[in-house]
Length: 118
Image (tube, rainbow, N blue to C red):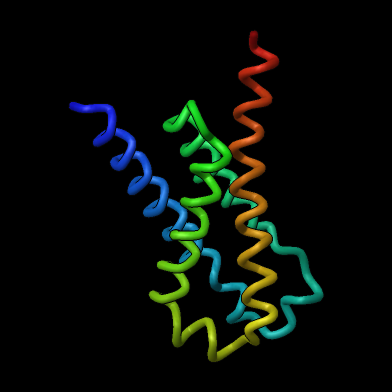
């Protein structure tokens, strides 16, 4: 299999995984006063970041951030009625940026562990 097709296969896997985590974690908006409580479901976004960093060794952070942007867009479109009915655009943007942050942290964690392992 050519290297280019492996790159696209990994990217599609990462976007799919990120979108699934985004859809699972959207229940935050269904809870009434969730702003006063912690949001441990955001830690699930470390998993797509780790997967992307392991699949795209040459540019793990760039690949993870692109995957997160595409995954947020796809997940947001799939949950359009559910998300926008219970939240504002500002809250949705802040939560999405936090998810992108955690995905990037997962990629950086893999990079740190590789550096320490050497």
